[in-house]
Length: 296
Image 1 (cartoon, one colour):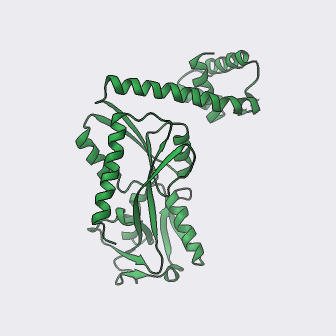
Image 2 (cartoon, rainbow, N blue to C red):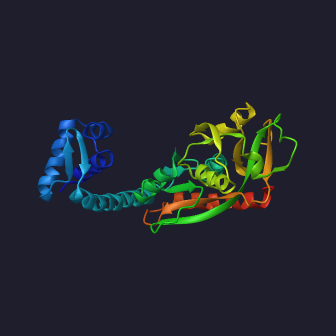
Image 3 (tube, one colour):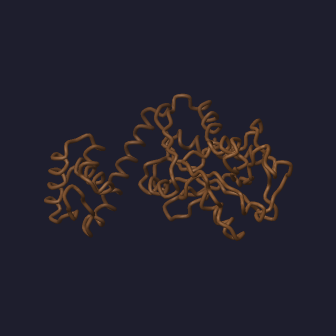
């Protein structure tokens, strides 16, 4: 059994399509198909049910996938550990986030300490973040809400009040607070379902007896304030995403502890480089300072 066979197998298992897997691996379809066939011959069992170029993991394949992921995960951790020992001042931090309002400030603080470390940041749904963490493909996830799973270490770093953002000319703009009942007939702008903050806030509205009417659902939380300013709709905005200079008015929600928990997540089994350890310290220190100064 060869390492290349395992890498090809993982690509096909995740995409379940020969053409797409070959494209992602930058190899020909025939080369990919022959490699998978040799792996199945080595193992003595078929790993996929085939329908043209589409493949679906069968029972053998599902069992083998978990072992193959674990084997490649351990090899990658070994590679990263040796890389860290031979060149600790360089490298790349892999990050996945479902909330990015504080990320620019955090990265700015970290770059002061480690100017030569590069970043690769993915803005993803909660489901995708959990998958990346389980597979050990990211050093950290910055998430709201937190994730509680056996192989994921979850450190809540900040409790963030959530406010209602309305345009300056809105009927509520002269007030400092609002009840959920008063939001029943409003139109909202927000992120798509599947993002932790959206699902969390929708559940609050449902408990208050209404389903929010969204006129915009997107992938970029940072765009919401601009849409509010343009009077497209109102939005729930975390306090960490509030920009005081914007022509937008913010209100607290009465009689509700409307907050979100921001958590730093990592796979307990993933090797942490020196840079990753320092990044975790920067995140904790940043939110500790923010807790001491953030107005409620």
